[in-house]
Amino acid sequence: MIFQSYSNSYILSFYIDEGERIKIDDIYFDDQNSSK
Image 1 (cartoon, rainbow, N blue to C red):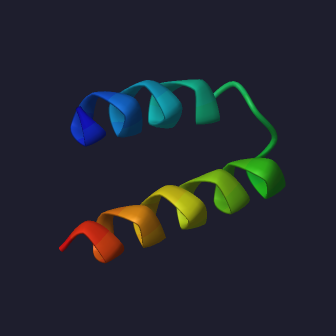
Image 2: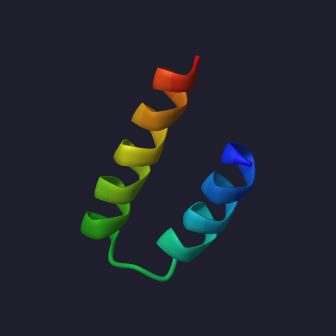
């Protein structure tokens, strides 16, 4: 489930400005680390 959410968000991130993309990626990356 987490992977699916990450995948969808990652794809959407491509449509967002680079600055915003970094923010979103950072949040999701942190979430994955927390899960680990």
